Image (cartoon, rainbow, N blue to C red):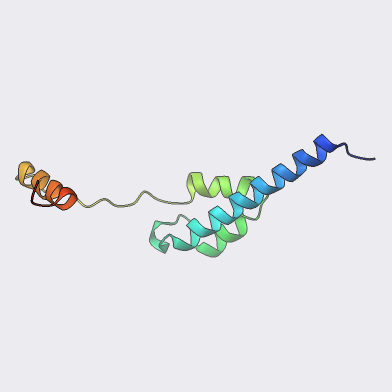
Length: 92
């Protein structure tokens, strides 16, 4: 059975998307600290090898949300001024 040009192009595009998802998932996986992962890194690395589904599962369920430090609630105006000074300098 021979494939026509459109079928070959579709297979190439799907292969490129699959490889891109795998590389992106592995980069995110190895940059994420262990305490934020729901499985060990080796488990996610193997799971990501399952065609297109593995990297998508990792992006959806593989990481816990990052902990955001609590902002100072006693003086919200002082905190806002500090943020503005850090962004724009004190010579606004």
